[in-house]
Image (cartoon, rainbow, N blue to C red; front, top):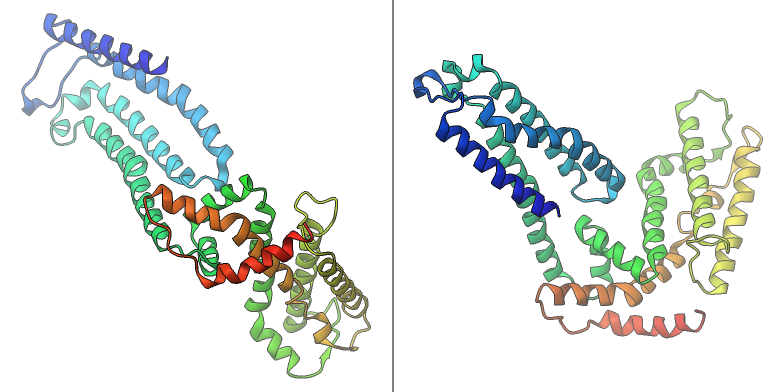
Length: 345
């Protein structure tokens, strides 16, 4: 219906402009030296389209784009192109409807149609050029994909492929493992980003600082420990509790080990850091829970590889016309994990 309406409107507009031009209804053509004089009557059809775009389409489209938020690859590009289009449309109407401007020497070198041309280039670049470039990059990345654990980890480092992989994981009902991988890296990154500081404070006996201390080193230590404690608890609540929607399907023995280690860590943290006596010596080894979720992460990666990535990579290569290379040794090695995992599914 929309396409029919647009075609009908274009036909009527062309007919209207032709009638106005041929019969000279308040219409005259001036020499180029005097600018681009034209009647407002001639421009009524395009003004109607612009007004509908600005008052009807723009608010609706802005609302729809905002709903995608950061999960939509072209969201920012669409918003930028829409802003440019609105500004150019408003300028076109303003300058075209001003006889003082269009019939002046200025319009000879800078006609109002410049804004229409700018809109065309904006739409071409944002809606054609950028998607084509990203599509080409995706094809190249797919061509380089290896069907092994290394290839899986490379997908997480590529924005375009990761979004496709994430949607594929949702269909395969394994999205919780992909989310866990991201949060696991965030958890490990806390220690990685502060490794120099941790080495510095553990090079000598570590004493429990005063919570109200103004010492920069003490404040940073408490801040890091609180960040680690919060992130560790958050990951456990999301992926290990039986009432969580993202609970991971893991061996019972592994769950008990993680639960026990986290419990011991929490006890020590709350007893000697949060509620400890100022100046009391702290054993940092008992606070260092950096490797708390390492074994779980291995299970998650194996599950993603076997249940999601293998078929994802094959489907992508098939989609872009690439032949799937022979299976690597890592698949054979990981197949044993699949057998072991199936016993506790």
